[in-house]
Figure 1 (tube, rainbow, N blue to C red):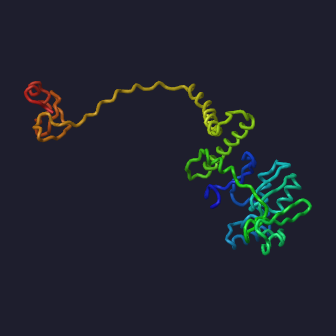
Figure 2: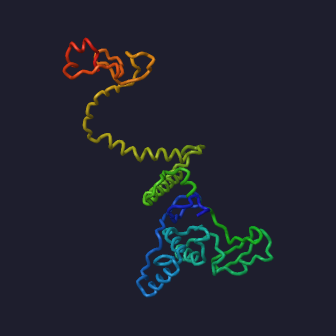
Figure 3: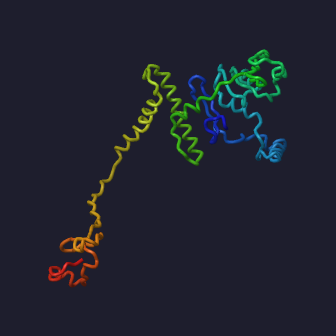
Length: 300
């Protein structure tokens, strides 16, 4: 999706408020919806046709755009639904109006069969001119934005993706359930901010970082109960920690001539001077532990 902020990932259908970008309802796209008619003869023929066309086991879903808009706008009445040209159709506009008393506003693709030829024709039209077509409850306008380029109606742009991306808890992951969970957290936190802002219009007047402050307070409030609960958990007494034994360091020879300028770990057991192996004298365990040998000769 080159025109979207995220060019790849998991697709979700979202119905948002145009003014505040509050997410009303979301639906994760998981492929074609199961159809009960798939067990009938026509269903089997449709599946076979889909295989021949290379569109998977069941082929492409018919009227997907209409089904998606009706799903995510369920429960809304008396609203104006704005969508892009993937969803907009005359059939959808009529169903929204007749079933839920909702109006539809959106751009229309030029391959729709219900479009009149007079609105699609570009020859002889002036730039920035408009043509209108009306029915009893539907209006359609063709606007010539530039030469040989017309736009059928006007649509708003997506804003929820932009505001959610500004402050997000998403992390890089290859597990799609976790990616969906991150998106749910982002959208839910933004919805909470919209509700808080509407209920408290005088909160932090003149501040431009209200959402960041809200998310900081929200995060602390979410973990506060868990932190309080962990302070009352029974804990075993910590085992005594033995002081660390200082590690031996290499030092220069203290008995050998300075011209060697070498370092060693070997230390005399009596005087604790650093000596090399050539200067050290070898003793058996019995002689090394005897007082006479220890006094007469340095041992390692």
